[in-house]
Figure 1 (cartoon, one colour):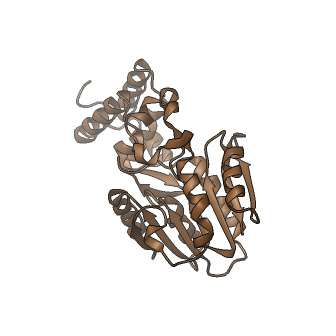
Figure 2: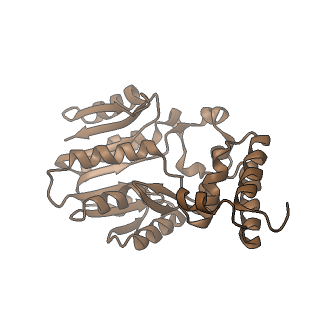
Figure 3: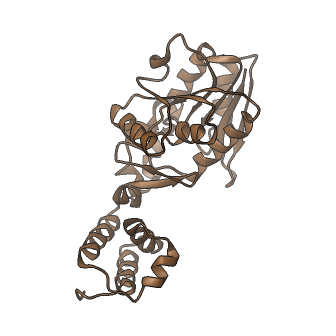
Length: 281
């Protein structure tokens, strides 16, 4: 490609290159916009302009990396969640729209609760706990994760968005012994190991397995939550867990058996899949 290529020519090359490697062509535009920090209007206005050589080289390298399976978000270093950019790395999961639905459900549930004390277990990049804090500035929010690398990313995101929350390293409830919370929320690992064969390579080969997979047919972390939740959740209190697309009945049974007096139910996402397990004590 000539050095004096236009943005349009480079974009056309990228779309064709990705299509040849059986990747979604829309990624060509998404990558260019993210690398430039532009919106689509700015790009349209600049299509016939010459692209600087340094930007072209960075863009071509990113396109080639994505063609081999590298997720866009790990190439650009961020993803949007609730219309806010959050840093992501190979130590954190990439935020997904389904998790936005879980956060929206939690916000609706606690709308009338004043200054809630919230715990986000296994926070990863911090998207859940930090978004709850951003939407509810009066909340006292604690973020925990067993991965110190992931927690470091969460801290960067909290600093970027100027959100005052507490960060604690440790496994599940270990960092908050003797504390109780009004709200406990988590998007834990829930994919059964056997489902690896069904997963896309961009996820399986690049996102952290610690945050994806769980033993006991994907239920291991829920089993631990079910046994310990009443120790850390106030009465009355509310808990929300993201779950796998077909885990609703099984996860509900786990929590209902452990918490026989609690109101336990699950709800589906906009695609009609099981998505969140909800508990009221």
